[in-house]
Length: 118
Image 1 (cartoon, rainbow, N blue to C red):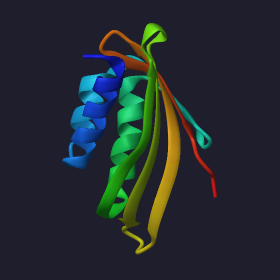
Image 2 (tube, rainbow, N blue to C red; image 1 turned 90 degrees about the horizontal axis):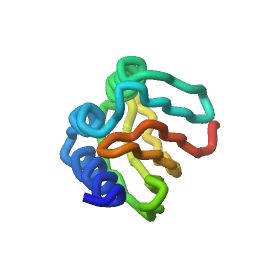
Image 3 (cartoon, rainbow, N blue to C red; image 1 turned 60 degrees about the horizontal axis):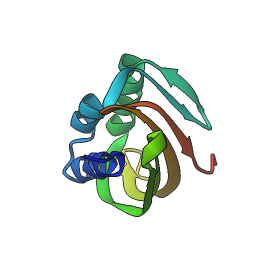
Image 4 (cartoon, helix red, strand yellow; image 1 turned 180 degrees about the vertical axis):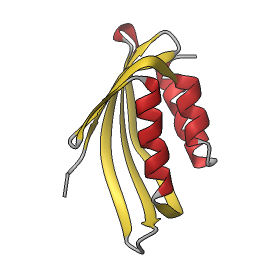
């Protein structure tokens, strides 16, 4: 599988409600995840953050992968997505973001997210 195909598999799993399965399969033990709100280091800390995020969601309305591109020679994948969710507090949000993944073999070692931090 190419890095682009692996990333597509991640989003296919997310669409099937298997975000944590995708995380367990494709993220390295020493992964670093960075976003406007901060940086998390290590698979355990990053997974805990994902669990907390999922715990805030009441209803998942959809996820669209708008653009997906890769630099296979350097193990880098770029993904533009839009996710529509209703949180447990009743607020519905469409969240647009771009992520840049750095792969090492079959796993992501670094992922940075770009979005508006409102």
